[in-house]
Structure formats: C-alpha cells, structure tokens
Image 1: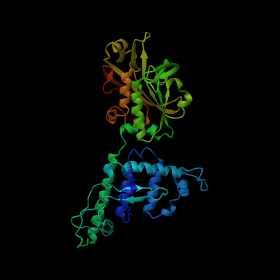
Image 2: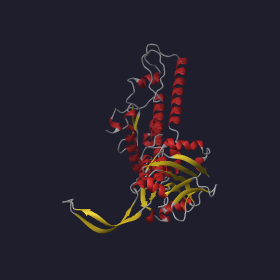
Image 3: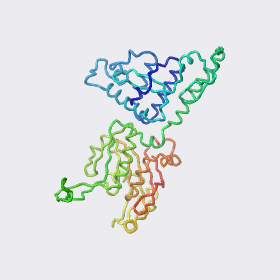
Image 4: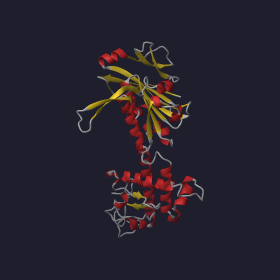
Length: 420
C-alpha cells in the first residue's frame, strides 16, 4: 500500500509541528535512499520548505526546473522532463523507506502522483495535538510526541501555563529538537565503507566492472526441449569467467545498488581504454586480468612472480627483495590449504582521470576475500587505525591476507596499508 494511503492527511500548523516535519525530513534524507544523491535531497528540501511556508503556488514544474536544475525560464518541459522524472524517483524511494515496519509510526512525507506539493501524515500523533501545540497545554497523562522520542512535561488542561511556563516549555521543545537532530546526525554519520566508495556513488556515470575472462570451450552441448535426454554438440566459441571472481562482483554490485548506482559488466579481453574513460571502474582478479596488472604495476604494493611462474607474490617497493606475501602454486594445487594474499586499492587512474578500485588476490581465495572486505563495514572500520584523518581525499592501497582451507577462503585481515 502506498505510504500516502496509510493514514489521513495532516497539515502541520504550529511551529512545533513544522519543526517535527523538518526533523523527519532530515532523517529521511540521511538514509542511503537519498544521501548518495544531490538532486533528490535538493528537490525534496525545497518543496517541503515551500509547503510549510504556504507557498504551494510556487511548486510548478517550470519553476522547479529553473530553481533546482538551472533550466532557462523558457525551457520546454515536454522535451526536458527532468522535474517529472526526479519526482517519480523520489516517490519510489519514499515508498521504499516507509515499507520498513520500524518507520510505521513516524511522520510521513509523500508527493501525490501528478503533484509537486508534498503532503504529510502522522500515524502516531495523539488526538488534539495541533491545538495543544498552539496553546502549549497538555493533559497531565499525556506528553508531546516528538520524532526524536524525547518527551516534554505538561501542565493539566484545567490550569493554563503561565507566561514563564510557556518560555520554559518552548525551551524544552527546542532542546528536544536539537538533541534529537544531534543524535540523528551521529547515527547517520558516513561510515568508512561509504566514504571509501563515495567517488563512485557521486559519479553520474554507471560503474564498469572489468572481470577476468577466458576462451574455454570450442563447442557446446545443447539438450532437446522435448526430450532432455537427447543432446547435440555444436561448434561455439565461448568466453567463461571464474565463479570465485563472480563472488566479489555480486557483493560490490549489490552494495552499490543500495546507493542507487547502476553498473555494467565487461570481460577483460573486451575492455578498452575508451570504456575506462567513461566513468569509474572496478577490476576483479590479478594474474588473469591484464588491466589489474597494468594498474597496480607502478604502485607500492604490486604483483610479481618467478620466471617459471610457480611462485607468485605481492611485492613492496619499500622492502625490495623481501617476500612476505608469497603463494606456492604447487602447495595450493596439492592441498587446497594455503595462505592467500590480495590487493585492494582505490585510486585516481592518471591514464583515464577516473576513479578505480582493484579487488584482486594472488589466487581465487584472495580475490574472494578482497570482495568480502570491500562490502563489510566492520572490516573497513579497521582502516581507521592505520590511515591519516584526510585519507578520504587520497589514494589508498591495502594488502589483505586470508587463510584458505579446502579451497574456501576465511575472513580477510589487513596486513599493510599505504596512503598517498
């Protein structure tokens, strides 16, 4: 059921009620549904402010196009439907927010279809609140409901509050709203995970995933739809991907979608520099992905191997010749139990002027661990112990290690970090 149909419409009239609506708006805009965008919060803030100020006659498509999106006053709204498209997306995101049962008693904001004038409802509002808020009177058994969950004590209805009492009550209300807003700010502070991915979330372009691919088959077996026991073999050149490389792809792509980001996937062999210049990219896999090796080659931590390609390691330019993070392929193949290592990096690629992220292990276990690290807020929080306060504006490279048992990787652990 759409949110706007859940309860009757309510018009905020007192200063307290309008402040409560503004606080609810900030709570809504602090969620991933809105805080990854600049356009949606700007739109919603303006229309709510105009509505609370009684300026609904200003909430017209052309006016919003000029004021929010900088369109010329005579722009054609038929060929440029940016206001309608934005409003439709906001309606969808608001509905997603209120579908969560924990928001069922909160003040509700919604944009009716075909209108840019927001409406409000308050399922948890006690009867008579509007008049009580205007007169600052309360029954002894009732308290004012403020979205921050703080309450304000009141005088009995039969004994109106004196002038000093009004001032005290007003001060308590302001304190409650400020305290609630402060608590909300702390609760919604950007996590390390979000800060790490912020350049990707803010980019207007979809994210490109470049994943290792190989030509594996020259033929394919097809089953008969009427008789699945009957098969035929046809010539077909197929490109395959490793299932353990798909794991980080699914994890990271799913996380980016929670911030409203679109993405596309291409194989390493079909990816060009032109593709990479269009927007931010994520590179998965190391020794089977030439783009990853090119990107990490000049970095402090980079991949290396012996000429026989039996040993592979991550090399540190600060300690050349020292092999702390090495994998012996024979041990890996014989036992399936080994320590694997991975590089996770986020940097501005000088060849494309776009942000890139690398998630690449020496072997499959490391790549899976890198993908897990990139979407785990608790693992990401460990970075704060090893990075400067301004790390968000810098390039960052991390070496991870993981214990692989029977070819399944354990949790990722940070071995080294470099920020520049």
